Image (cartoon, rainbow, N blue to C red):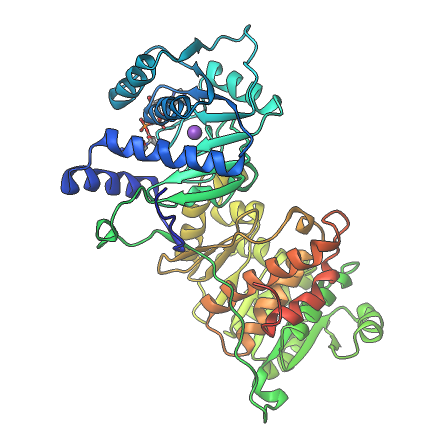
Length: 494
Ligand SMILES: NC(=O)C1=CN([C@@H]2O[C@H](COP(=O)(O)OP(=O)(O)OC[C@H]3O[C@@H](n4cnc5c(N)ncnc54)[C@H](O)[C@@H]3O)[C@@H](O)[C@H]2O)[C@@H](O)CC1
Ligand SMILES: [K+]
């Protein structure tokens, strides 16, 4: 087996095609040879993952992904396994034809897929239907086969990409294979890490197919996997004034919890001081629950002004509402020119009144908020999360955290980091309020907007994973506060 890469670099499908062409044109490695290497490494992975497997069925599509499948079938049969191939179509292109001929020469058993036939039984299914060439939702016949494979309960190894998943964007335009394991070839495609990918890909292995590093020369990765980060240890003579003063603005009628979570997260992530500007009715609850928060009743811009002057960073949005009170505070906060984090209604207000940020700013939209900010639809954002995040960063002059499975952090200069931590337990109320407070605290301690957003997203997601050891269902946002403190001090497990 060829050495797997451990690089954090992620590439577009177009870039992987370029690498592939370079291997063929500059190194003289034939496409058929690459296909053979892909098949061999995938078979090794299959045998390692399922050492008891004796019978496999390989589902082969019309393109080179199918070609990988035919060669894997030949190698597996040669190794003494029971192998059947189920073919999606008669017409094959290019090297896939050669691969099928290899399989046919070995007198392997093949069936054409039709919807009335039952699928052959096996220990493991190999998905070689579509790879990076998928450019639309699978055709009805392919879609039906994908649904049947998913419903079979038999574990699936996907070759290169779970069929039906767009390897460039992480979006599934229609049916898509749910794999236990995916072996992806040549380089890590960015779409394997975000959107719908995490629920489709399963365990992921990247294999460079033995291609030398020089092939990557001059090619800049399109995105990067987020690495774990934390602040350096505090100086022994640190003063609370050295660690910034976060002012959290929000908590309209009935939403005191949102601003409290935001403020507490800022405290737990090391902000020196945290003030809260909120409705007067929230003061008692905030003071009694968390006396370290300095809660102030604010009726309008005048009272906010003096708090703004003392603050070094603003967290604007949790429970802010979009009424006259929220709007007036929002406008005053933005006019102050202070570094800020904007979330929730802070973003909804921004969608109505666009503003370009001159001071460091981090916006943390979920896909619905991102759609409003871009004046488009949520499915449109999810169709290409990379493009949406980049466009938001460019348009607003801010660092963007596009939340959701595989959160993206986008810088106005085009850089994107992808966070692969986090879990479905975190799809619950208050998690976004925490994230706003975490990022604000990091900004207040001197991080750039880009570093605060990346470190904040990583801490938040890993804290979620740590807290979810007690079970994902029923996970509360406040369960993350203790892990946030531990991880922020570099005490968590990497
Ligand atoms: N030389 C290379 O480029 C290598 C490619 N490899 C494999 O080749 C794959 C890419 O191969 P291809 O570009 O041939 O494409 P794919 O094999 O990914 O499949 C696309 C094929 O299906 C058709 N198709 C696309 N969308 C469809 C849809 N929605 N419904 C029905 N049919 C659809 C296309 O016309 C094409 O024939 C990679 O994912 C990888 O598995 C590997 O063999 C390694 C080397
Ligand atoms: K596939």
